[in-house]
Amino acid sequence: MSALTVIRPRAEEVEGQPILRPLPSAKCRSVGPFVFFDHILHTHYPPGHGMDIKQHPHIGLSTLTYLFEGRVQHKDSLGSDQHVGPGDVSWMTAGQAIAHIERTPQPLRAEGSVIHGLQVWLASPKSHEQGPGHYSHHPAASLPVSDNLGVKICLIAGSGFCLTSPVPVLSPTLYADVQMQTATTLLIAAEHAERAVYVLEGEAQIDGQPLERHTLVVLPAGEAVTVCADSDCHVVIIGGAPLDGPRRMNWNFVASDPALIERARARWAAGDWPTVPGETGRIELP
Image 1 (cartoon, rainbow, N blue to C red):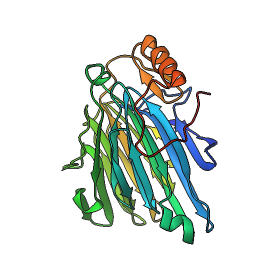
Image 2: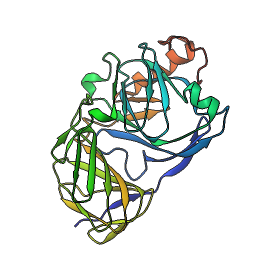
Image 3: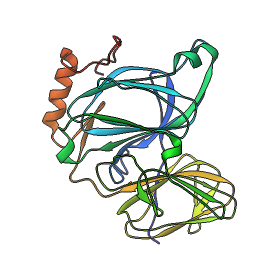
């Protein structure tokens, strides 16, 4: 087997919420369509507090939020207002201009809450970069699951492991939530050109090479690999077809043409942007 690329994430905060961010990295700018990967760390909010990410803009990407614990309220400039719970998928395609907020719902804010999950960004194909925005919510029960021989796979988005998710991805994608019991194995086929494994909990290895907790391990292209669980473990697998050209990322904007980003920055700074109904707070340009 070729060498694995191991990416140790940066510890950061997003409006006070601690996260780990392995993508983008100097070692790897993207895995399939995935250009951004945030592990929302397990956080307990006492009564009167909660996550509160004010109105902010996006272009050229889709955001996918997937929680293990807690709930979040998503509102956007399309008029969407959705509470997202554990195992649900919150999918938002930005197109040429969208804004949204993400916060702890008011009832949970009053009584105290926890949150733990993932948010990823998937770069849109060039043909969709300047298209219309879109939002859809996919309850946990709507996602396909395989549970065999101690390995449980939930296909969050795309296709893989003989499963297909209803999430409307824009290019070939693999995004799976995998729970493995001790001493089980999982073959990750080479059906997707680019793939990576992120270890949430537990101990595992690939062909004898240990996988560190909270690291993103990029797999060699074109090679099937086997994940072996040395303990009960929880991993996610991302991947898909390579991007149709390089992408530039600047703040919350992703684009194949730098001019699109400069135009988006100018529009947001000038207040020339779709707004989220009922919201006045916003995050200004860094």
